[in-house]
Length: 164
Image (cartoon, rainbow, N blue to C red):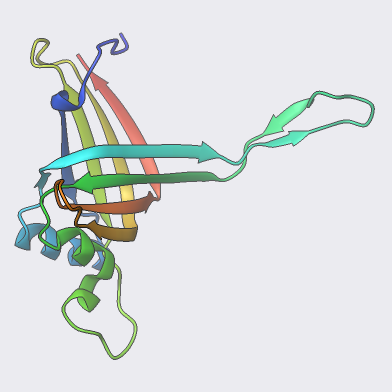
């Protein structure tokens, strides 16, 4: 049976993990050093999956007769009020500490977004983004609001799971 529960941001949590390989090892070092297995102080999480659909129009017809699936792009963003440089380190890797003389690997990691209503334990929805790399990071110091960092990311693939 499909999950039909209603959730709010208060029902959610975010955790990071690392895939195998050198990029995953670089991410795991940042995750361990900054205690990022469970990401806190987050708001405004957004994930977008888009398909580059290509309509085929026949001569003499106004409506498309076929839609062909194209490239899939997975992007998103996270706003975070706990600023400690971890997201910037996940973007820059070794270059966050000092400028390397040559090329370097950018860390890659997985993001798991879990929502579970405490009134319905055991019924949850999990979206996992695989092979995530941060593409943009910014830092905002407003005059009279919370200091926030934000990161935009891209992912290689996405999986979803419903339990309960």
